[in-house]
Amino acid sequence: MGMYRQLRRLLAEESGSFAVAFGILIVPVIAMMGAAIDYNRAVAARAKLGSALDAAALALARRPLEGDASARQFLQDYIQATLEATGFPAAQWSISRFAQTTKSVQVELSGTVDTAIMALLSVDQISFSAATEVLRDQTKVEIALVLDNTGSMKGTRMANLKSAATDLVDTLAAAAARSGEPDAVRLALVPYTMTVNVGPHYANAAWIDSQGKSPINDQIFDGATQVKRLDLFQSMKTPWAGCVETRPAPYDVTETAPTSSIPATLYVPYFAPDEPDLTSGQYCNGSGYCNNYIADGTNSSDWKKRQGNVAKYTNAKPRTGTNPIGYQFGPNAGCEIQPLTRLTSNFTSFKTAIDAMTAGGDTNISAGLMWGWHTLSPHGPFGDGVPYGTEGYTKAIVLMTDGQNHNVVVSNNNQSVYSGIGYIWQNRLGISSGSLSQRIAKLDQKLATLCANVKAAGIVIYTIRLEHPDVDDSTIRNCASSPDKFFDVTDSAKLAAVFQRIAGDIQKLRVAR
Image (cartoon, rainbow, N blue to C red; front, side, top):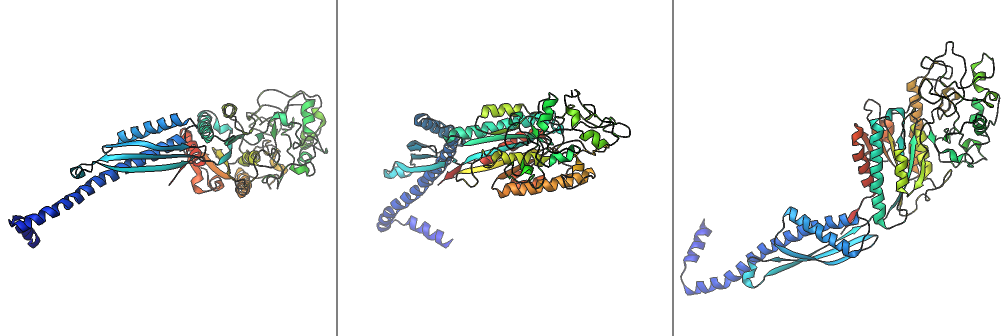
């Protein structure tokens, strides 16, 4: 209060000396107050303009590369619309510098703010500038979509999966277009069930066991060695659909390139044996053996001899129709899925392959992941991927499942339906029989090892579990490269949002200051 009274007394002072002093002091005081107010307005204007500039440059960088004139106009319109939407102090601005390449967008703005108080001192405007640089993502990507096509995916789930995957392709295709680089994004597609279809056109490929050299053959056919499965197809005038079996351990979880010098590394054509004609006391959903499609050609009481008789396939005509568990009768039973698509930058044909996917069959997630790895690998069977560690490249797998590994238990001597791991009694999982939970545990162990091997190769794994809240998700969760790369989707309608998040993670843009 004392200071206030003194100030009032000074202001009331009528002496000439004080009036002169006050007149001298008041001018710089007003100037400083005015400068502070006007300067704060200029700072606010620059901040808003800078934010609008960053947003506009990012938006331009996400577009396909275009001419400088249209790009500059896009920036102009985008910034103006942003400023009008957010409110902006009275100011004038213009793009003073603009440059773009396939790698970056650089923009600088110049602006002025009209002063309010400083204009009394003949300072009419305050100038300012703002600049930004957006780096276009130059990382090239090789991505494999490994997608569940099992029977539980029928209907709405499959429709939503196709839509989400197609949207992801469109997003990545746009990223590839704006990069200006050739093959900036290459995609592979691996539909999987309990096996994978590589395509029947690979029948003569060096990595296919066309000569029956793999030890897998000796497990099925009674007393016969080096059975040529493709010859059996030909004898029955039945085309091989293109599915392959999983390789025996340890090659079922490694990317060891197939070679005839190590027969176990070759891929054996999927061939579902004709199961015995015997029905007494044997049940497959109440209908005997599941896949009984030709006569056994022997009167032996030994079911294994009936099933393993190679001679019965000679000039045989397989039964047609659907077997008791929903597969087509014959040696391709369970191979009703679409072939995989190797790495490609032809996004139109890739989306056609997505649309062609169909649902049906049991679940072996490792079978799908193994072929997803093969599509990205620089090694055989395809060798399409760039070498690991190549600068400027990222390899990623999007692994999606709507459940868990599964190997159906049936009440005949085979104890299982034929699949990519043959029958359970072949001991391809490390057990020759067992309950469903025991089989799932073994399949999960295989998957965990395979996931670790894929990640050790430098491949990023995103995993998606769809609409299966009652199933333990630890295996598929731990398969992801990091916790933020696992997605638990409770409704297939939400797949689109998840796929977009993954696409965004893959093709991030960043602002460089």
